Amino acid sequence: QVQLVESGGGLVQPGGSLRLSCAASGSIFSINAMDWYRQAPGKARELVATTTSSGSTNYADSRDNAKNTVYLQMNSLKPEDTAVYYCNAEIRTFQDMHIRSNYWGQGTQVTVSP
Image (cartoon, rainbow, N blue to C red):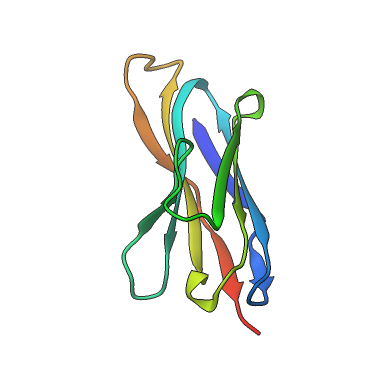
């Protein structure tokens, strides 16, 4: 009933930039938060940025509430930023307006390499 679809990943050279998008669709009553995580090979999934704060000045998270979309602007990328980037959203649906559930997108690959 709810889908999160990420886009914008790809191959970029070190020092380059990428802008990821995550669009939520379906039977959405409200969205409490939309955040970005990433998972590198052999590593645990980690929080990258939230809609209220970012742990790094290289990431800027912005949200378009009208479109149920969140963006992640990544600058000065490094090879260690290579990972699958996932969108996570805490959503209430019309079917369960009193319950906040977590939804994940399918992920988008970001590869930083010369």
